[in-house]
Length: 478
Image (cartoon, rainbow, N blue to C red; front, side, top):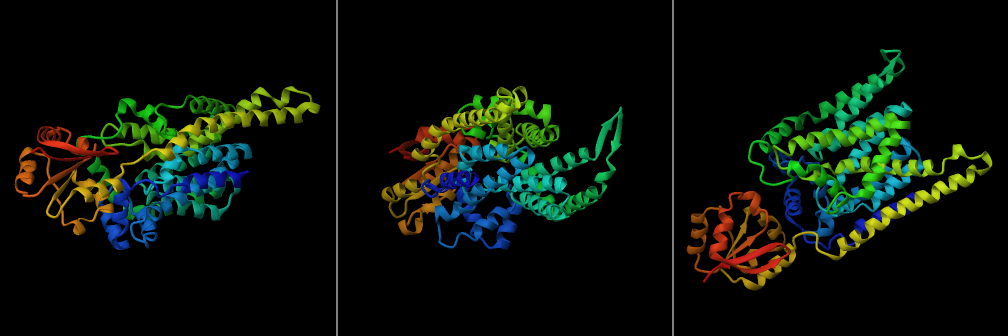
């Protein structure tokens, strides 16, 4: 069954991998990853993301500007996350939870989307799962080699995305709580865990030493992110609803997911408290910190994609617990218990089918309609309407990245110019150019120029030539 689930997940992540045009963030990945390894490391000192994902992509860019190769690492990590989630769900609860949670991940539209995007989010999900899995089995199996793998994957996670820092303190907190028990009104130290405690704290020290080269950069980037006006991202008022919607890529939070999530939390509190603490910490602590951060820095729900596996495991626990409660084995004679277990399995399959049916239409729509700005067609269109000497002005300037991925102005003899957002700067570009000026505009202008001076000028002085998937092409009025 798990092989079938992996096959389904792989198919959904490979299918049409290169069909969508590269958009802004993916183009940024391309230009960063095309540099030398040393160049990538130096460039990411001034970037909001660590270098590891760009290192990985670097080795796949051997065939030029290929959308498939650019997205291939994300696809691979997306597929690999499925069996790791199965192993974690099985170790935390049972094979049922392992199979159900891995199946839910395989058909998760949010996870499919980021497994087909040339960004680091699917890699972060995989490394988060690996870190927590080896952390948990190292404790349960008392195996030092698992502690080594825990260190490796935790460090790699932090070098993939700075939100990887969230998982590390959760693991420290979980193990620290395991060291103590509360009996007869007294807090007691579990001395039998002392040998493991020594290995654990050596592992923690190893992680800290290995991430030292990035700690200063992390704090510098954090300071730069909170230092200015928040002009884009999720409004704190709608933070929770936006996050829940994004986890399923639906317009609103899914009541089906939320219902079984609540049932899963209840079931864990009643019978699986250690697992409940680990999974709920994995969910709640990053959300609480991110909720605070969303008021002082730009924040997008995709930064928290790494909590999706915990969300799905809890849902799978709610699903199996509900099936067991309805057809409880303990309330029937021993001769009928096999029948009750079969009924539980049938009911669990019915519940899983509901999740599958709820995901089916969104998945079909995902593959049949554009999900990203179509810069491929934008570049093709610009080639047909421009002539030598024309000026192309991307607004804001950084959207030149996806345009340059597809458009080579050297063959057309046109010029790409970066402009400010004031009236005088925009006037100068038009009046100093004898040929035609084309402004290429996206919704990013609202974040880059929140006071709207550029939009006001464009509204008064330009006409729309074409609109291609939310990319506007304008020219000055005659």
